[in-house]
Image (cartoon, rainbow, N blue to C red; front, top):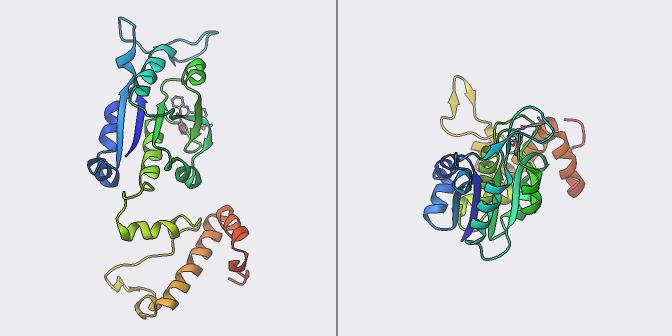
Length: 241
Ligand code: 4FN
């Protein structure tokens, strides 16, 4: 079983969100475990404070090193090895499918979620954190990024998806966007499902879908298209589209 430990000031946010859908089932099936550790439980401050003003002045508060360090030491007690510690941070390397695949191989992962203006630098040094970002926008904390990562990673863990779904993983993560998809009814407000999808000719359908994926990716995510064509040059669209 893969174990994911989340150091956070809002443990309910982690436990609640991961109890639904595919991650929820994976937890119940004991394929993964997601445990939130409340950093506040480890403070030695009589008023249970976990934050303080920055040395040198400036706006806002920082998370203090002591509760984070002691929380981490408590997590280590549950770990078999030395886990990678991922600090969710706008200063991080961008999280992508390739990193999700790499992290899905790890038996244990620790996530550190920041709040306020961030974390005392010494906590990051002591925990040997790797900074990871989910994208360029301002957030109020690292919990949603940690949940995004756990969602993307867990579905890659063996046995978490059903057979049909895991068959789709390869095509889903080949680096192209999905082709347009349709379900019943065949006509809605005069809009028909493309004729080829009703033809029953699976070869033609596959061919149409692959071309639609390439067209869409080139149009909507040109940088993903360029990366795909570098590894599959024979599939390049000829430009007459
Ligand atoms: N964000 C930016 C620049 C400066 C600050 C922020 C910002 C939460 C603790 C970090 C944000 C985005 C993606 C964690 C943003 C992420 C966070 C993330 C995050 C509170 C301090 C903070 C230039 C990116 C807009 C707040 C840019 N992925 N500070 O959001 O934790 O993981």
